[in-house]
Image (cartoon, rainbow, N blue to C red):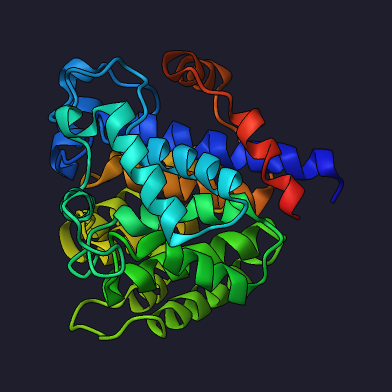
Length: 331
């Protein structure tokens, strides 16, 4: 790929991620039945935040911690020249200070506790030992986007360095490894089956970094199951099943399964993947963001309506092409 093609594709991945975040923000932690009742079961536009359960104080089209953490960490890794634990901590503490995340109530529980502990003097290698929620898989894209040319061994180390201060648990590491390896495979043009195989490798690889494998649902097993279900159900049936049976709440394995369900069902239709993520209930902003980014990496571009994307860029003052341009230098 030429530098321009790489930069355009990285920009598209970021655009899909922030779009999923903004579209899923207003429905975050609504139930699937609420979304059916209020919006007909499909979220296909930016919803006025007056209908939101959690974010009535944010302007319509706002991004949340999902995007803000990824964007700030990209900047910090660029500044450091490498993905390090120290740069991760620096970026996350900077994000809390600049975004008023505590006041906006969109920092996750694992990150909130860990970063409070770090500010109190706890080592970043100890602070994340209770972090099982989805804040780890949520920020995995920045690790790949910083250096798209890294091999799987490098990617595994970088994912660990990104997660360890806040999400140093087997559940979080497995989910992040699965997603990170899948994102890399998708960006490199591999087939759907090869992407799923990469996810299996990634989950197993990151489990090698943890001291204790705890009793919790397996992200790898859930990915296999949702791929099977995506071939047996239509979109609405799958969203119902993900919400009511598999679960799509805050846990890492919940979000991982839901993301791959939307990715598998959408079949390369990026906007469908985003809309499914925003429509299925639960942690909709994270699911929609990750599903949109993975789908975009898979097909190399996106089909997000221009008015939606431009609104999000305007509301949040985003220069995504500038950030993406820092990534292709690492190919």
